[in-house]
Image 1 (tube, rainbow, N blue to C red):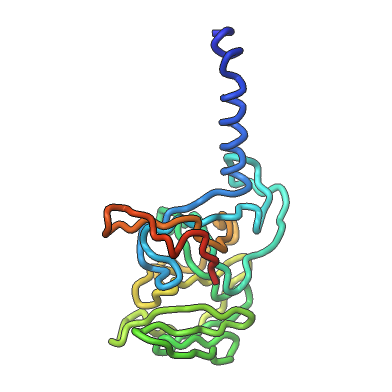
Image 2 (image 1 turned 90 degrees about the horizontal axis):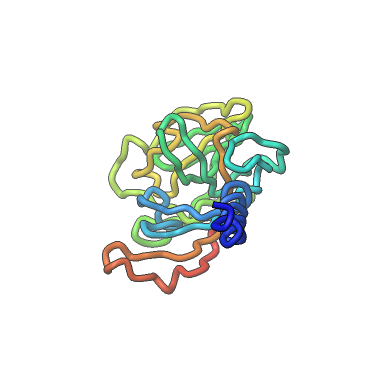
Length: 209
């Protein structure tokens, strides 16, 4: 056993450091569904900056130091206890915000969010300080409206960019600050599930907005 350890310790130390890095500093995350279309599509692998919000003890959720809070417009990864799985959604409401939606039009703190129609149901949504793409259906959806709600302290209101097809805060409720894993600002690579898992060259190292 001592000989085995002596001959392979460099490899095991490398593995330990790699797992620590992925646990506490940076990782990647699969996108299994279309809830964030057109920003993210099925088969995307996105980078996750795990130090965007907290410095944590590796392999735990214990925060040693809060670096920043999630900001409106962030694409955030979080471990949802309500959903029982890891989710990727966009931060829409931060603590203290009052948010409402009428026919897929957001109102934040009483101010209507501006929208610019594009094509095929896609639009530009101009959140305060952040403009991004979103997608809606042409038909009326039960998800398209909700009454004004106030985001409680240490919680966030999260929505998918594919507004009529996303199980987000309209289903799971407000997301606690403690559930956030990190923030994503780019696609590392993307595999086309409908084309023999071949890479999508146009999405390689694609920046996210």
